Length: 147
Length: 77
Image (tube, rainbow over all chains, first blue to last red; front, side, top):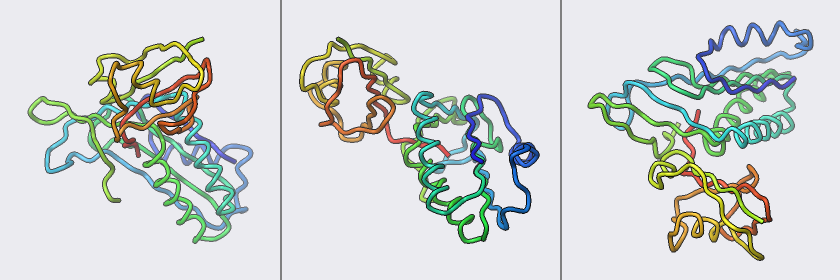
């Protein structure tokens, strides 16, 4: 089962996981390994304090890119379930930005698939971050951190 | 006989517009769409682009009626 969503308002990753696993077509016991990655907003970047952030995206392309990267990972690693959430709009430090959760038969596939999907997302999914700094100025984030 | 052009993030702010439209012509490339839409002589190196929501290159041929988007390196996640 694959479940992908872009959220315009705040989401709770742990509630999302619970809801996902309560769906009728989630087959408990089929998978032996579940890896979860949650990315939240930091209050610092490039040596500056960041007060808030706006996440912009290209809606028509975002859905296609996320689906492509999830399906590639599911096929490559033999995943049983994938849950992906990504936030857009105005956020504050500590707010969740991204959730990737995968279920597979064994731990290796889950860890590796989680990492691959995050790297593909960060390099290909059309999202952009605009930071609000303490002096009232704004700037676009120009590059990803090394990870 | 036209191409819908979209700009995102810092490019949108720099250009002062989020969309444009250019007339289609035979053998039109994505780089030419950029030049026609912005009035600039060449496509900047850092700019990424997509045709009909799929990544493409500056020399990719653009079909009539396509949606072409230009944007800076992505920074999600």
